[in-house]
Amino acid sequence: AASGLVGGYGVARWTRKRPLGGVALAAAGSLAAYEWNRQAGPRAAAGLSLAYVAAFAGSHPLAKKVGAWPAVFAAAGGVAAASWAVTRRASAPQPPSACDTV
Image (tube, rainbow, N blue to C red; front, side, top):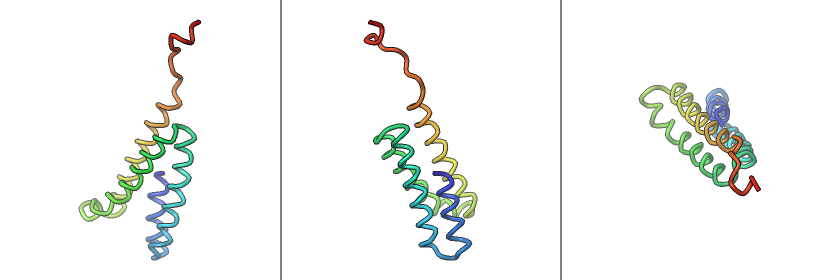
């Protein structure tokens, strides 16, 4: 997810074609959503996908205050942290329940 935000901006900036950056952003977001769904389920994937889109949108006004690259890296870091936290919790071993000790 973080590489999609950074890569999408990088592609748009270096090619001077914003739609091409959008394609990279969408492709990486789709792949991330697939992995989130696989690792943590559909609810987590939906929430993290929403966070991905919100980070992309939020990086634009932030860029006016701190600059483009710092805003992109901040947005990418936020999504990476959220992704790590959600998928880590989902993959952590669960303690046995009372039903498991029969």
